[in-house]
Figure 1 (cartoon, rainbow, N blue to C red):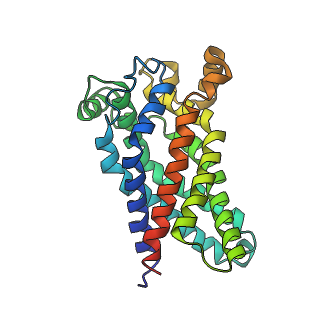
Figure 2: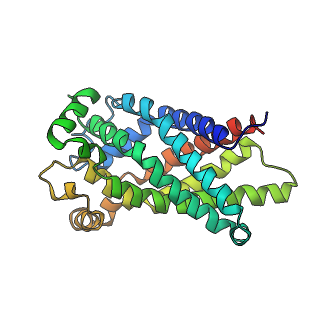
Figure 3: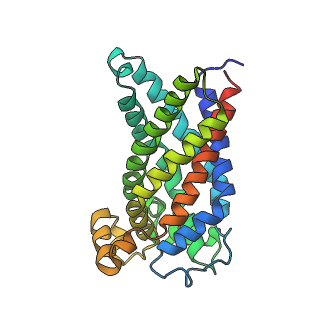
Length: 268
């Protein structure tokens, strides 16, 4: 089946985002509670690990769809240039940056409500949304936008060039296009490596999103937050939740990028 680039990116991205976010939600909850200032047990421990899934179900598909539409469109535009076609890695990195900035306009409000739901056992997602709008107005939904972008851009700068490079190398070695299954394994390893390296940025992002309005972390300045975390908890605090994060994103990379390649293959 042949189609324009927009439609495959939109549908494949939506399917990929929904599949990974819903299937791996419990690991994300555990990771968030490990990073919470309240501590794992006070944040809920292992109870209610699907709490906050409502916003994710509503937001995962459009967020991922926006990411891949922006990523694939940017990549096609850049690769049409003779200079950029000779520097593929740079094209992948720029495309990933553009895609993250665009996707975070959907991802951040979802993440704010989701993470607060995961750590506030006595409040529903709808109550948290109402309270956020009441006390922080609309901008409260974008608390941590800059810190999220600052986390996601380094992550994507690592993951997507590695994923593309791994697929290209595998394709060259086998003398054929890689299968969605093989692309999924490339996503597994590239995602896990990127997740480990960028964990401190994820801890800072979580701290900012969960901070009370009067807390200095609520200002959203990522480097002072990182400094404060290190001062209070040391290097161990900067890598809080690294194991579930790496597990979650490695498996997530497998499902996310594998699903994307699988659905995309239907349009080739």
